[in-house]
Amino acid sequence: MRSIADQIPIADGLFTWPSNDPRLLGSKCADCGVVTFPAQSGCPACCGEDTEAIELERKGKLWTWTIQGFLPNRPPYEGPETPETFKPFGVGYVELPNQVRVETRIQTEDIAKLRIGMEMDLVVEKFIERDGKDIIAYFFRPADES
View 1 (tube, rainbow, N blue to C red):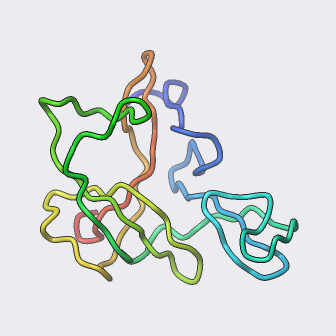
View 2 (cartoon, rainbow, N blue to C red):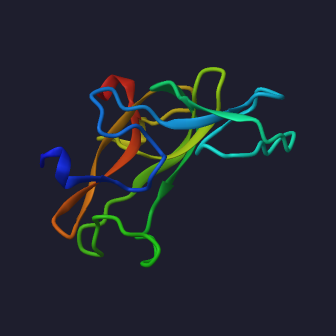
């Protein structure tokens, strides 16, 4: 892996970076307690404007999922796959404890093993390379593969 100077998050404000213990960044409404990801300046539940930035838990449970069975359109998708190298992958929502459901690409060696309710762990690592830099993104993977 490249030095930290050569690693760039896929988007600002999604997760702590650089970090040896990266966390997704969300927000919590001071008025009603709703947690959102990604962080928002206003609350989608009560329209309150008093939100605070919070770090989300690294572990959760697979809430639902599906298989991405074809190469997504380019643009907007900028993944590492080509039509020749594409392999189907899991996409789903991971529910973090008492917080929020996070939409995510699922990293797994065997998509047939994915099950609703299974334990999942956050992974933050290189997704693609662009202009000589590693673009870092977040994923979730089954806990028994972490």
